Structures are given as C-alpha cells and as structure tokens.
Image (cartoon, rainbow over all chains, first blue to last red; front, top):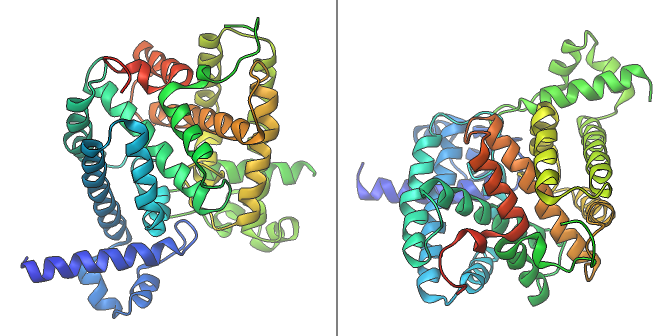
Length: 197
Length: 191
C-alpha cells in the first residue's frame, strides 16, 4: 500500500470513527457510515470489507493515539495525577474517540474474548505497560502491570464519558476524586471510626 | 407485571448478554425464542428500548439489593470483595447483560434521562452499601460506588471470558486495587 493510500485510509478511519460515534451502540451498518462520510458504498467496502474491519481500524487508531499521548505526558508530568489530567484535557477535545472506544475498544470486556485479543494485549504491553513501568515499576510481573493499566485506562475513559454527558461537572474537585479512587482506593476515603476492617 | 412479562425480561437478559458488537439481538429473535409473535411482544413492551430499560432496571436492582444486604452485615473487606465477585461470576448472564446495556459501563449512551437515573441510583445505593464510610458529598458517593461497582463487573467479565484465571492472584489483585488503589501495587515512594 502506498503512503498516499495509507493516509487516505487513516483519514477515512478518522471520519468513520466520528460517524460511528453518533449512533447508538452497534446500531449502524457499513452503508450508513459510507453515506455519512460521503463515499460510495462499494468504494468504502474496499477500505473496510466488513463492520468488524471498521471497528478494528477505529480502536487500533484510537489506542495508538492514546499510547503516544499518555507516554508523552507521562515523560513531561511529575506524577499520575498530572498525566491523568492532561489526558482528560486532550480527550475532551475529541469526544467521538471516547464514544467509539466505550463501545468498541477491547479495554472494555465483552462476553467473548476476541480472536485478536492476544495481539491487542501484547500491543498494550509493549507500547504502554512496559514504557510506563520504566518510570514507575509495578510490584509483580507484566500481567499485574497489564491489569493495573487496563484498570486506570478504563476508568479514564469512563470519567471522560461522565463529563461529556454532563453527569458530573469538570472541576478540580471532581478530577481529584477520579484520581484518588484509582490511585488510593476505597480506604483513602473517610471511614466511620470503629467500623469493620 | 405477570409471569409472561418476567419471562420476557429474563429472556431479554439472556439474549442481551450474548450480543456481539457486530450483531445485537432483535425483537424477532426474542419473540421466536419465547414462541411468541413480535406483535404479542409489543403489546407488553412498546419498544425495544422500553424492554431493555426494564430489563436493566430488574438486573441492576437485584444486584444492588444483594450487595447492600451483604454490606450491612459488616463483613471483613476481603470477604466482601470475594463474596461480591462470586455473585457476579455466578450470575453470568446478568453480568454480561449489564455490561452490554447497563449505564456507566462499556456503553456510550446518548440517552440523557437514563444517565441521570444511573447517577441518582448510584448515589442512592452507594449510601446504603458504603454505610461504614462518611463521604463528603453525593458526588463522592457516586464516584466511589460507581467505580467500585464496575471494578467487580469488569473483573468477573475478564474471568468468565478467559482473560484471566479465577485464582488467588487475580482475587488478591482485585482486593488491593479496590481497597488501596494502584499505588499499593507499585514500587517505591509515591510520586
């Protein structure tokens, strides 16, 4: 594939992510998206032969964008909270990425483990878990590192959705709560003295 | 709600738990699985949305009532985590259904009213379930309980779909992540 057609695929993927994000989960067809991006259905199918190809292209693009930005901010930032806030700021500008990821990204488990899940997991480990581990190592093995990363990335996306949907206000207090529950857990909140451990 | 309504909702949970991203279940499929016609189904639930809404409500309320009951008995934290995880593992269809159709999980909803109801429900149940905590505001109850709740759902889903094993390592990780956060799983001083 030439670089010209590669960039056409990327541009089409970006437009398709935005189009798909306007539908209720799973309620779209390739024909719908082709129409939304202004392309003939037959030509569109040369880029994405099936719905699953479009979904895969979408999450692959979003994930790689996320890895790049998370690592860049992590290198710049002094701590997790600053990186988390920088990611919130960035993705609030790209709400369609968040809406797409919520329904189709593999970070959110579905009933069946996708066939290409091992490939996805290895990509996350190589491009995010291991580089972040160099900055602040996790206790235990790579699997623990993966599960922790999986956890905070999922929380970040869900927190973004709560802000985007207007369910919670985007204030420093709210952002601190988001970070506190991820970093320090339930027992960092006030407990009534004398209650069970 | 009569017996047939309950059967329809239960079957909705079963079919809805099996959905793939590419292929959500249809009303025709649901009707056929219950030996009903689609029009018979629609006399009881006017739209697919209404059916899903009521099924989500049924599952969510039963999960929360169970968790509240366990929580108010004052169990030790590790027992509480394991007991709740067992519940989600045992109720496999409900867990995957809520993942597919529940609010605030892996679903980008465009229905503002549903999201508002989800927010208010989480505060209501959060206050009952986190009865040993004195949180500062309704928003704290919302954040703390909704984040804790989904950690259980995701952990159970990952175990049931074979992403990780249901063993001591996974359960200990869950206890630590929920109770003390990811800082407790990292080396060195907090940065």
